[in-house]
Image 1 (cartoon, rainbow, N blue to C red):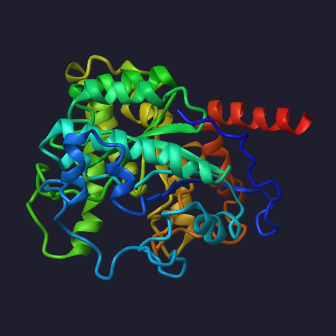
Image 2: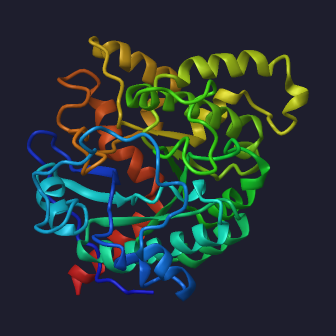
Image 3: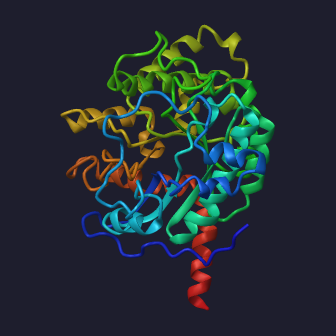
Length: 382
């Protein structure tokens, strides 16, 4: 495991906000296949180096790609391959004090070969922690899991849980089972024991061994696919609470990346109403489903719903507990990334905006941050 100098986050608040920003989603991406292949067992290196990731590689994608091109490193495709462009185009102009690198290996759970998927997850984590976040003191790491084999996933959690820069676990929302299924409970138990939130990210629905991306089959356009991902999020959220994950592991915390937010309100209404009649199906739940969700389920701003009246959004956030559960995610380096200066514009909801842009994330990831920032203070004093 690599060792790092103490982190030195950006210290001067941006004049447009008056406080720095915490970004929980930067899509760090290896510059080439060799960066990952060298960490794989020998039996997998040639397979991966030649571009084979199983049937998970085909599916819906944005026309023209999803990434900005203004900050590309010469000779490479994406400008989140190295930390320098991330600092130039994200950290400095938006005064990001911490940024979590969530990677881009969200296809792993669509692979039929569970051993290969677990090996790819381990290799990608080695690159993220040992080669990427070390480049900048503001970067934190989320480790990626392939959940098909929970025992291997738990082993990967335990391998990284003690690392000072590892603050989160990432699983794909692509799944043959809802994420609350008991198959995945050992992963959540290990995460809670290590004090690491579990985040889930969509992208590869309908690929590989995954079921179709909608309950009615395959859509015809990317727009249908992309907007339909919210329905998948509804399924996973209902599963997590109804199958007792939050009740079994009260210290477990779940973060939905890029899944939207506003759909949660009608889901809470429906779950609470039916729970009163169907408690026998959910013996672990001692509180209303919405109580667990308001306490243990977190959301991100990208993609944020944008009604014409900002007040409509604020009312929704208030009713789902958004003052403590919503966090800012830039989604860098995608072209539709969130600008922290523009979300919730004007003076409307100023305190909520501060919580979303900084305080909620600092609370969720506080244990690791306290240790990192304490190391900074000690180093500066010395």
